[in-house]
Length: 205
Image (tube, rainbow, N blue to C red):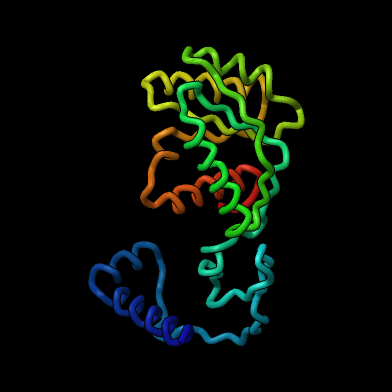
């Protein structure tokens, strides 16, 4: 099948080259396309195998995308991470969302997540900086910051990102409050967060 596709592609190139426009362009470049492609003997390599969290799978037709729907190539483990949330957030809502995040990460992707240390920040945008300075440690793997639906959340985002990039270098993941409150398609949203977190630790996205 691949050889047939190659032959058809070569025939199309020849057709274009023999056309008035194509021939003129090739002539200016000093190029010429032979009517028949050159046939070479090649070696057929064995089917590549890829190690995933679910086990070893074969690469079919150069792709293993279908296997990635329920796993990742290099699942990471989060044993020491921080969850920072605004005081205005409803505890039951974000606590349930965190449980769903951890459950889906482990069951669907093999990404193990310990219970994070949870701390809150006040209503002033500067409060998040104080909380981060007090709680981010050298051993902290990741900080997840929940951003409120308040307009000031943009400033909270900038302050937290700047601090975690410059003063307290640590991987961070920002999540908006509207995201955890959604009911439709929540599994897909959580999956994207898990994959983003895993990718920030050199895992594939």
